[in-house]
Length: 286
Image 1 (cartoon, helix red, strand yellow):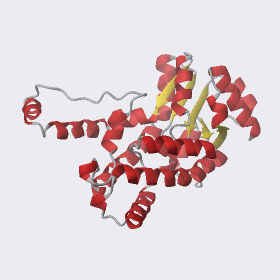
Image 2 (cartoon, rainbow, N blue to C red):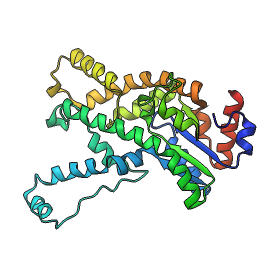
Image 3 (cartoon, rainbow, N blue to C red):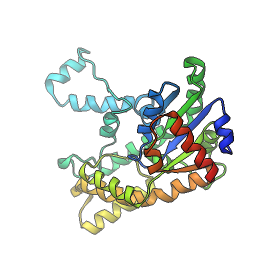
């Protein structure tokens, strides 16, 4: 770790952290607080994925839909209209829409073969976006004169690294430049995340082996062919399994590569000083 003690952290001229954990536990919220305070650069991995690495896929998907409308199709062919993705840190809907949900097309689903293809695109994009982090640390310092840097990672970071492998290339690259911080949720947080997801199931990335096993289990337990699957029902089922699947991976990342902060403590952060104190406490606890 680049900061081994609380003293290392508090006395550092440059503070670089990567926040990880399940979506909904406050990574982006805290990153926004730090950025709005004026002395932290906020790097969003999901935003980087949706712009640099999957932007063309997203826009092409928009165009496929537009081409189904004869009026828009003629305008597209003649370059009379321009279609773009208006993705932002707070609105990642263009990326989510492209990722989609597997299942019955009549219910808004996409075939599993296509779903797997898009999942693989996301896996490669996420790794690339994570490996871009050191470049953005340098860019933030040389171009914008930021001493402090927060990387707001996606919830699926634990699916594209191996926290038990000391030679993992992504984790080595990240830990050389940032302190990895797990926002650790408890049982009540998991229940609340599941409740929110039940209300509005959203697309997400799954580990390939986990996806295959979970898909087979859902189809078997519900006695449905993959073309009959309700996409939202599957996503709800997969999300609850994913909560359990990811927890030990996050824990291994924190134990082997960084520190952990209870989600309740991170939720109390109101400014940069609060954040620095929480991180110092986590380093002391380690």
